[in-house]
Amino acid sequence: MARYIFTLFVICLLSPSISLGETPGSDSLKLIRYYEELRADWGKIFPNKNRNAGGALFFKYILDNSNSRDEFFEKNKMYCSVSGSLVRPASQPEFVSVRGQDQDELICGSLYRCCWPCSCDVMKFVQVLTLEKTFNDKTELINVLTIKNPCEKPDFPEEVDRDSICVGTSLNKKRVTEINGRLVVGVLFGGKICSPKDIEKINREVITGSYCPLRNNTPLKEVRGGMGDIFIKMAN
Image (cartoon, rainbow, N blue to C red; front, side, top):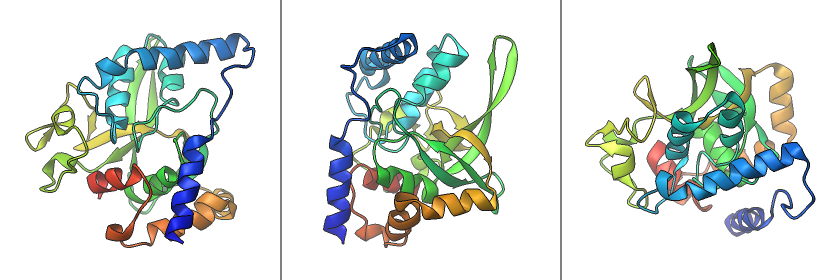
């Protein structure tokens, strides 16, 4: 079963979301431009060339450098909060449930990710909080994905660029965003309190209804599945 799950993970990574070779319309051109800007800014976002579990670094960079509401939200769809991988423009998100600020509350929404294990890891290890941001003099509440402060961990994963995220046991506020002592790693789109129908929908889907319970009920030391393993070391 573990080999089967890993094979699915590889297939997902190798399957492009859209073909950028198609003749694009004006909206598609804009998305491609945003995507290419993120690619061009890669060295600024990851000056140490390490993007492992880099969602937090993407989020902070976009938060500080977006010139419009549209740019902020569209660019936050173009990276994986778990792995730090880029996500192609117009990719299809996963509909997931995530713990809310009230631990007994589930928030449902759309997650942009590179592959299916990342959806499972978000559903298990992430908590949704709200962040205020002003666009054109109008303040909005944004549902953001957060994890516990990993800088306090004695076993911080060596695969991650700790110096970009941490200053001692505190979060590096020049490079990442902190809310209530938690690290922001990305955005949950269309977030709302889950309804019974939302939960039914999540449970019916192959990924969130079948694969995620299997992955999330596996002992952490036995979890295998690409970049998500590194994220789990940070978020657990």
